[in-house]
Length: 627
Ligand code: GDP
Ligand code: MG
Image (tube, rainbow, N blue to C red; front, side):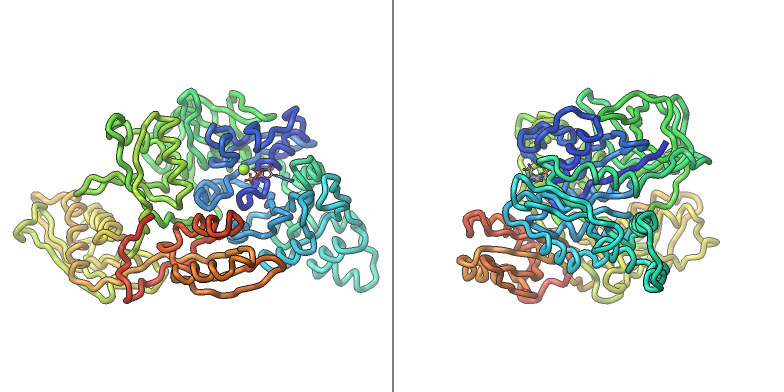
């Protein structure tokens, strides 16, 4: 059987969930098309998603088209849920990247496209909403060429765009824009063509799909998913381009868990893709390199819009492992393999403190948050060692709102959330050293450590090096020192330390009483002591933003954007609107999207994505401003 693991990706509201409905209905997996606006789609199944008309969780559905099984992952498009998207990417054979014909390429479209390119995941473009008043296909193509890729292949033309009667027609593959784009992408073909040879449609198709699979070409389809326009050709393209003969990856088991969630009956579900071998019910499989094995108690596969019990999940397919207590998102079952590496995952830039309301109580809150962190490890639940404040890391205001709502709906826990605080980072300006010896007053550990902490170049992250020989201190002790040192950098003096290396230079050791745990506990204290000696550079996250607002609000908007310490890169004047691009600190713009909306009667748009950490300027203290 042939198989495709397909992702649907896009900026929020471009139409991913609606396209998914269209694909389900066209393939026969579903009778009637659900609507996002009525809360009746298959993949927006959480009540929160239905009420808001917005995807929060990646959802997997499956259907067949021709001789191919298509497992489809519908993803959230809002920036705040980027982690959910990134976890899914590792299991995909290909992607439909949806672009709204009305809005064109949006900030999140670019972020996603860069990730796909870095991970060598091929994509077919679907330009949606061609029924909307004001669409300009020429404009969208120009936008794609300027902001995504010049290697786009127009596959169709459209009639009556901007109306309910919009429809699409295939372009000829013997001449014209489709033909030209494919021939130009392939040197051998181009030469044959220039030599006057006739290039057959079959040759063009083969070169088109081959070029798409290797990321040399991006075919672009058109449609209006809401009105069921352009879906069938999209299905054909997915099957033609991405399908591969599954089950032909023999060998030992390797499966990757891309999602963990609890279903409505409180069963834990671990969604996984089998890359090689097979996962069998009632077998024991090794897990994430740990000693303890996982017993496969329950197994499901997907088919025709739903789930069904399964005895085996074979290579290439997606399945669900039921009720395996220890598995986490991002784990491997069987033998680990290298996943396609992209850019490092987007990190949350904000943190929020959470307090249970009197009635709920701390244990209930902690239970709920522990479970939510298993589903989304990037939240990283932590408890402050002194104040005991419970906090999570997150991406933005919408995520805060959603977590608060989920606590209440899923767990019945009412809790108050602090304003969002920016996650600053710090770096020592120069090398500093510190040591704590056995017998140093106050040292309760049977260990002695000397460290030097040195700054390293921007973007280099944190690292650890030992200059103590393994003859003097054996490996299990040295590993404990390394772990403790990294924990010390993560804690810093309140903010995480970046771009620094801890060098282990000297130690004391008592052969009778010392244990690795002594070294693991002492190491962070020595790092802390060194940092207290250092002058620290404070770094804050900066964003790249894109702002549009109607002309009549230009003056107000410019004043406001200057107030948030933005650096403007371009101010362009369209027919009715002003478009501003630039860079700004996150700390001062956390609230800007909402401010702009009220400043422009709901017509201004502020969208931003993470750029880099930069030093906080001298003229301000950089106190955690809050909203
Ligand atoms: P997602 O956020 O990418 O999943 O987008 P949705 O599928 O939730 O769609 C966002 C909004 O756009 C909803 O109100 C849809 O009804 C609407 N929409 C989706 N596709 C089309 C289309 O082809 N034409 C029009 N006019 N609206 C659409
Ligand atoms: Mg959606």
